[in-house]
Amino acid sequence: MSYCVHCGVELEPSLKKCPLCNTPVIDPNNIPYYETSSPYPDRKGKVEPARRKDAAIFVSVLLLTISITCGLLNQLVFSRNLWSLLVIGFCLVVWVICIPFIFYRKLSPYLAVLLDGMAISFYLYLISRLTGSADWLYYLGLPITALFTFLFELFMLFTLKVNRSFFSVTLYIFSLISLSCIGIELLCRNFLEDPMRLTWSAIVLTVCVVFIIAIVTILLLPRVREEARRRLHF
Image 1 (spheres, rainbow, N blue to C red):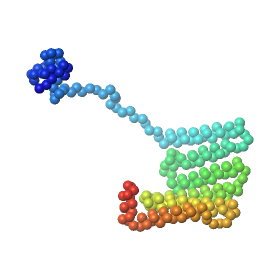
Image 2 (tube, one colour):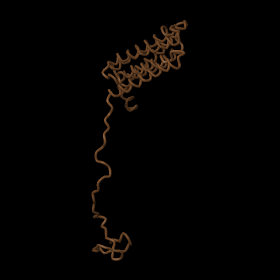
Image 3 (tube, rainbow, N blue to C red):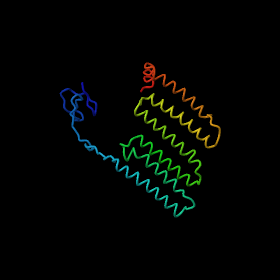
Image 4 (tube, helix red, strand yellow):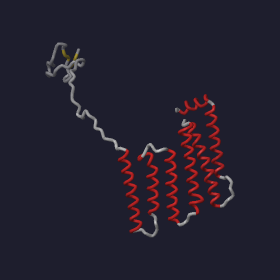
């Protein structure tokens, strides 16, 4: 038995309208479907992605504008010292770092790391010109830059040519940290004319050696390696 949706009176199955309020009888099992058009456009708008050439032009123009503006301010307004060399050198370093990512993606990663080291060395040279002291540059700044450039070259070599799994890359990173700390402390002691021995870098080396031995053990035991991968979800 059905009922009127408006007044609730009981209806006979053969009725088409409610005898009390003349409301049409609606069969919930046979409701007509009317297709309506969507108020939104069918075609999705597409924005053309920026090309690498456009990004290269934007970055170059931005860095060049910053360098020229600071240079003019240095010459015309704040001319007590050559502070603009720091800004110009920083813009140069950023531009060189962006080369393999924006300007030329086919650049060899080894050459990219070498160019980064050269750009940072030139920036340190500009700082030495501004400070009027070059001892720290030749005995500390340039050697540390050369050390990190060499270590990053080794890191890229092992990552790209030997093995680039998670545990292998972690092993390379801990080795890089330990060698970097040892080199920095020895170079600082040589610059300060202190006895050549390890102090704080020995602590870093000890921690890194513990992790290195653990990772090497995992790499040498296949079942332990697979269990670690399953536990770490990678």
